[in-house]
Image (tube, rainbow, N blue to C red; front, side, top):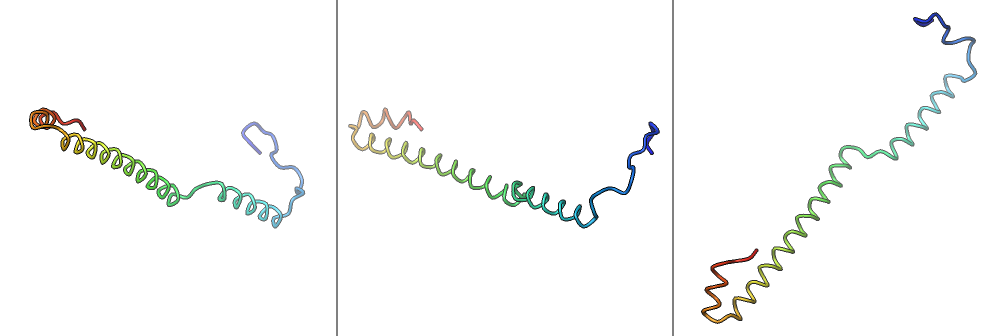
Length: 88
């Protein structure tokens, strides 16, 4: 009985306890297959962060490499102008 006075369960039902447990286990396995654990989420996040750091490092390296090439080709006067105002 509920607070409204209606009966919730009438009769014995048609599903056995064993059938209900099997159904619950099946649905839980489906849920677990679709859901990432916290360890899996952390692993994926760390891989994404590592990729972003690698891209940043590659960009920084290419800028440094380009600046080095420019400095080596420059005359002394140009060298001091470029060296005074580095662009990273």
